[in-house]
Amino acid sequence: MIPFNKPLYTGVEDQFVLASMRSSKISGDGEYSRKCQEWFQIKLGCVKALLTPSCTHALEMAAILIKIQPGDEVIMPSYTFVSTANAFVLRGAKIVFVDVRADTMNINEELIEAAITNKTKAIVPVHYAGVACNMDVIMEVANKYGLYVIEDAAQAMMSTYNGKSLGSIGHFGTYSFHETKNYTSGGEGGLLIINDREFAERAEVIREKGTNRSQFFRGMVDKYSWVDLGSSYLPCDLQAAYLWGQLSIADDVNETRLEAWSKYRRLLQPLADEGYIELPFIPEGCKQNAHMFYFKVKDLVERTNLIEFLVHNGVQAVFHYIPLHSSAAGNIFSRFHGQDISTTIESERVVRLPIWYGITTAEIEKIASVVTGFYK
Ligand SMILES: *Cc1c(COP(=O)(O)O)cnc(C)c1O
Image (tube, rainbow, N blue to C red; front, side):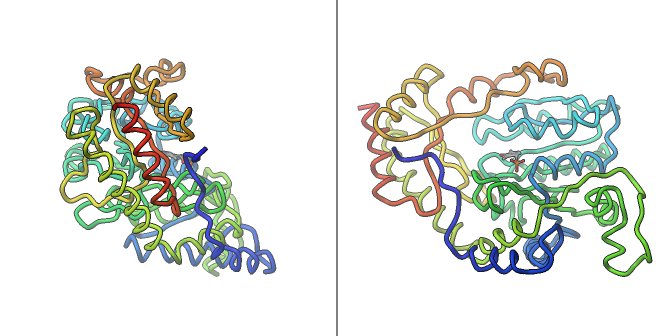
């Protein structure tokens, strides 16, 4: 069976993980955490980048930083991972979903303004498959109404929008280093990207159990104490060491994934030309990172049959997401603004094919020929 995913691991991680294990500081914010955070600060040109135990935690930190209160509303797409919503629900927010664009499965930027009320506090665009949302329109609407923008860029490391790294455009951005993402810090991990100087200091406090320990370590205060809300939002240095290895080959990984993605596209183009399937669309100005190779089939029935056919022929293909507004928790914590024209119907058409760093041409050719065989 060709698996759907293989977590990124090349061996380049070993030396750093071992060095970390043998050092005298393996808890959070050790040498490798500092190295990774500096790497991201330079790469993204952000005010501050803070490693977190997951993207979920980075989103939770953002919700605390913008002081979400019970009853505040947060606008986002329903076609996303649960954490995008849960991070804000945990602080009492009501989630307001708006429809996605069928072409990218990203939030439909034209529908956001109409969903804004006097309770709206933030917009959370999700860069699906590492392809950027229309950030120009989203930032314009946010600025007009004084709203915060938190980019859920969990899938989007190395992707850009008009030359800007995803995650570096809104007030905050978040990355995931879960094993299913393009880069991992050993299975779980994340990053909070802070682009507004106003939040830099308080973010460190929230991440260090609500204390000013980070300032203490920098010699800025002579003792540390409890100063604010907080939790333990920092990963251990072993995780950072693992990630540090992967950052040293970040460009190679990105280029190799993009080559695999292009191969799929080339091999499946004939099926698209004949109207059997729809291939992904990358808007102008967007550079993607080949996080996902997905395409769309006719409907839910065809998708179920195709995935079964693929599994039967040794290919583990998958689908996602069940739109959040139609889930049990969604009923309680959210509402859908306007009509669900694309979210549900389009979500039922998505099929994801195996992709990872190191997938071979032979594997891609086999998978493409099984897909073709299903239709022919
Ligand atoms: C993977 C993912 C997350 C969650 O990331 P974790 O690191 O597992 O917490 C959040 N949002 C989106 C869009 C994701 O794809």
